[in-house]
Length: 436
Ligand code: AMO
Image 1 (cartoon, protein in one colour):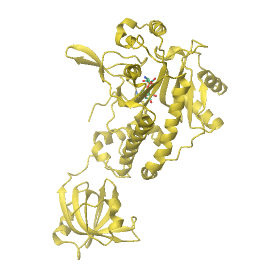
Image 2 (image 1 turned 60 degrees about the vertical axis):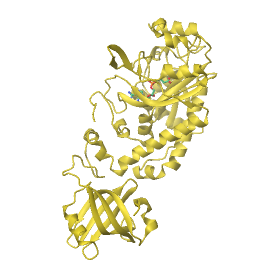
Image 3 (image 1 turned 90 degrees about the vertical axis):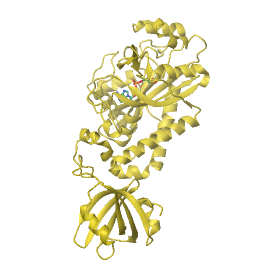
Image 4 (image 1 turned 45 degrees about the vertical axis):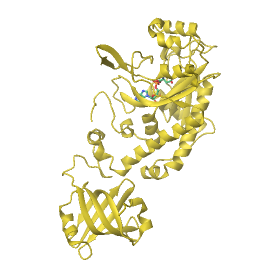
């Protein structure tokens, strides 16, 4: 007999079905036994009655444990008093894989188990359908973004994660022993995405792991995260990159509401209100607004998390937007490969996108003029000759270009309003965690 999924049971009322799944709950009364069964599509009450269930199966239920995998032959019947509107009357039950007891974590909705302990036994934790919903949504986010890039002429590329240089200022590198020589885990695909703009693709994107050897103990930093990076050639300025990001996020929020309606409802996620256009404030304008609220920054300083939060609150009040672009960052706080602004060489043609107070994306127009590129590397005390493969990109015809990067983890976290980035990553890596 073919397996029926729990979500399809309503179509099989009063007909015999075969269900397979995990036992979520067990309640054992003398003549009636309740068993909540769960599969990937939902959960359902099943009942065994002394008078109607096969005798061996009926007694077997006494020795069952929660989270065991079972197979049930039974009949779905209407039951208006049940939470599901139906329940399945068990005819026969077979144990496929018995779970040991006690479980190391409580994976019920009532669970108070700390996130760290849940991650220690993540495969048990994700059996909870609310936890699973986060990852189903994350999977849909990746798919919607992929479709968006494909529809906009981008080619999906895969670049090495074992490499020899890092170019992101401030982000540290993990050193790996590569057959006796030092190598690094990729800190971003920055050079490679620019490489394949130069390589004639013009528009490329990659969704892949990014490694940062930062000892940050925060709810938004990990040492390994999933980067979504793109790069586009033949642009006029950084505003064109922001235009693309704006369309992408609007497309993402709208499509997600349609495609993940069930999961979003299960998690009780509040809908995001989209402005007609995401406000763009220069860093200078942002700092003026912050000063009016009593927060002072030096001209070449970056905003701290508190400033990011405050500026988002101001924007939300003024422009009714949860999103805001902050543009023209001080050269002092941005990497050397960004293009400086023609009018004010102390800032770069860069931007960060904040969603409700947290940076979710960062990008810029890049410097493509070889001599200026060399000069900027030197200004940041980098030796252009030591970055030969990078420098070569600007020697044989490189269009003006720009791009951005964001973390799939952080986007999932922020779109779902999750407190901790770890909730949005199956197996997070941070300075204290390398397992499981
Ligand atoms: P940046 O270093 O700002 O830029 O990173 C881009 C985006 O990646 C996410 N992110 C992180 N997520 C989780 N844990 C971390 N430790 C972490 N660090 C960064 C954030 C951030 O906005 N090459 C540039 C991008 C570009 O200009 O194209 C870069 O890597 O969402």
